[in-house]
Structures are given as structure tokens and as C-alpha cells.
Length: 273
Length: 184
Image (cartoon, rainbow over all chains, first blue to last red; front, top):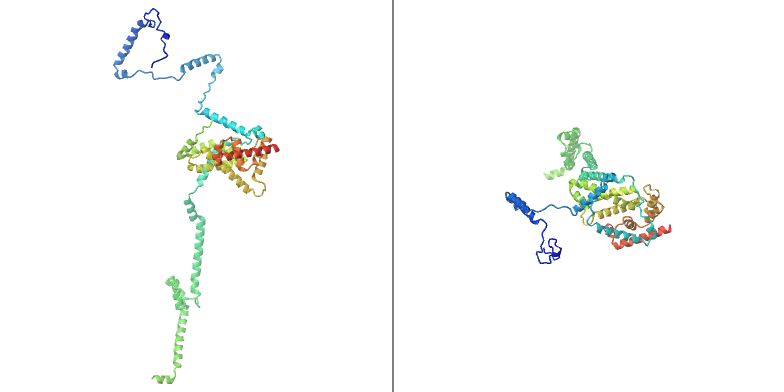
């Protein structure tokens, strides 16, 4: 890059000569050390010729130091020399301050403006303005240390008790209450059924047995009768009463026939003949 | 003890991962317990009641965190839940106290005098009593602005009220408190 501010008069190796002779100067012993310098350079290059890849890499100084490193070393050395006479002070470790956040200045400005705004709001209210803004509420010692665990326990206990809707519905359907009510209704239902069944047979007869039933009654109660097995039916039939019933019916039929015969006169018979 | 506070975003990321959910709960409570405690305490006054409300607040937060969409700040959402829980608690307390002809604020004010967890001097007690004569919403606005020094735009998000209305509410509350302090 061309430097426009360059002034030849400032060049130390350029002593001005008003006589018009060579005005370019040289550093002292330049030519005496030039040969040695060149020899060393050639020696180094010869060494590297055996390693063509290495010699192809441009030699750069890639390591850097933090800004103002060397100045700070000087300062810290000065500080150490100063402290040498004060051993106690030297023993204390210097605090390391963390770097400020990038937007700290901006945040600080906002926060200061906010504080001013809050104070200014209170200016019209003198009593409030002059009052110390303190938190008079206190908490028991170590209260906040236990809060995390207590809340965690409470949350976990509620999670354990948590049931899905399906579980709740199943609980209602197959739960104790439901099972009890179902059982109770079954018992009541069966009781009514078995209480009513014998009544329908017994109530319709005089003699309290199947023998006394009329045909129509038997047909009407067909369903009930079919529910009985053979043994039960035999038990229900009273043989004596049945015989009596049959005999009385026979006698009744014969008496009617006789009565009908008696009512026909002789003249009717002659006419018929 | 220096406690490391995770950012809201980090806490939410921990929550979304099933394996680190418990850790998220821990950091969430650790980060916000004190802020929320003092916010609730100023509304419900008693320490024991505050403890109950604080626990209920975190339980609600925990249950609803899966549905939190990050459209608002976590901090704002937490404050909103804490405020609503405190108001609900006071309403329940008021309903339960059917024998008294006085409003709940009267009882809160009376309880302050014998509260072992209140260390204020006479003027501080008077200030708290003055705050308790305010309507509920004004009281919350005043506490948030005066004690917590919260910016109006944040309050607006929490209380879902316009900044203008909040400013008006704060000045009316300050005027009432000033009058109370001067006249008493």
C-alpha cells in the first residue's frame, strides 16, 4: 500500500547531502553481515529441499497474543515488585470479575429511566413519596429452601391419584357401589319371581292341587306348568281328590241323561214311531 | 449459596424432554418461587395462605405447562396464574366467612396487627391498611407498581388491561392511600 504521508526527510538511512553525492545511506556494517545472512538463508533452504512439501508451505507466524499482552506483562511485573515487600497482601488472590453482558449499558440505562419514572410518579403524593419503601412482610427461616421439595411432593402425589376417564367410568360400572346395587336388584327380582310363581297355581283352585284345575286354567298356565318336571307334577296331583272329581262328574252326566229321558212323554214316542 | 438460574427457554426445553421433566420443575420453582411468593403475599397477606396459594399456583403451572405456547413470556404467564389464584382464594375465603358483616379486606387488615410474620413499624402498618382499603384490582396494580416496580407494559400483559387504564388505576390508588395516610 502506498503511503502518501511518507516523507523522505524522515528516513534515517537517507542523510541529505547538499553536494549532490549519493544521498542514500545504509545501516552500519550492512555489507559485512550481508554475506553471513545470505549463507544462513541458503543453508536453511538446502535443508528444506529434502522435504519438498514442507518447503512449499508459506512460512507464516500463525500464533497471536491477546491485545496489549506485552504491556500488561510489564504492568503485572511492576505490581509484583511492589507487593514483594507486603507478603500478606500478596497472599490474597485477586478477584476475577466476570465480563459484563453485551447489552449491559443499554439495560442499565433503561433500568435507571424506569426507576426515575417510578419516583416521579410519587412526587405529587408527599406522604407516600417520603415513606421508606420496605417489605415489612417476613417469612419463616429457611422457608424458601423447602418450597421446591414440598411443591414437587404435592405435584407427584396429585399425579399418582390422577385417573383417566375410562378408568373412572369402569370404576363406576364395576365398582363396589354398582356391584352392590346390581346384586341387590337381582335378589329382589328373583324373590318376586319365585314368590309369584307358586301363587298362580294355588290361587286358581279350590283343593290347592293340580287336580282341581279346570282345563282352561291349565292351558292358561301352560308356561308355568311346562317349567315343572315330571316328579313335581306327580307330587302336585292328589289322586283321591282327582278320583272324586271324576266320579262326581260321571254321576252328574248320568243324572242329566236320566232327567232328559224322564221328560219325554208317551205320546211323543208314539208320534216319533 | 449461589444458585444457577436457567433461562425460561432452557427450562421449557428441559420440560419437553420426558427424562429431564423433573429437573425442569426444580429449576422453575427455584427461579420463580420468591418473586411469586411476594406477589401473592401482598394480595392474601397471611404467610400460611400465601404458602397454600403458591403451591396451588405451581401445581396449575405444572399441569398447564405442556400447553404453554411461548406466545407470551413464561414470567408473565406465571404472574397471571398467581394473581388469579390469589383472587380466587380471597373470594373463597370471603364466601366461607358468612358470619361476618365486614368484607374480607377488613379481616386481612385486622390480622396484620397480630401477624408474627409482619415486622413493619406503625407507619408501615398504616400503609398496609391503606392499601387494604383499595378495591381488589387497584390494590394489585398499586403493589405491582409501588413494591415490585414493574413496567406498565408487563403489568398490562399480566392483568390483561390497557397501559392507560393501569396508569389511571395506579394514580387513583396512590391518591386514596395519600388521603388515608394524611387523615389518619
